[in-house]
Figure: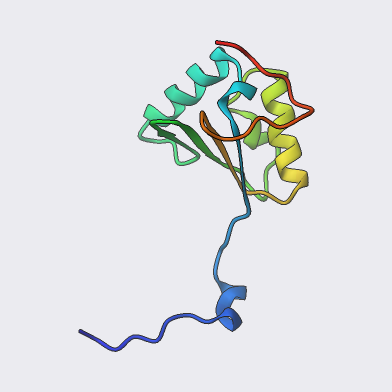
Length: 108
């Protein structure tokens, strides 16, 4: 085994890191769920990843409009815009995550 020096906090300026937020899949519509699933099934996609409990959506730091391409409802678009303003670059929609006051709940 090779002796490797691990990165330190001082090295973090050169390491890409993400702030993430998790919220319930109840905040997206069934149509959003279908679009996210289709996107995650596309081998050309590198933005949406499907999980057993929901999805991970990577937000672009450079293109806010591009972040909205995989959701159809205005409610889901508002969540992604809100996450951007919070400095998040990863949104986790998870069926076990908390519901967040201020966002609509969809029962599907």
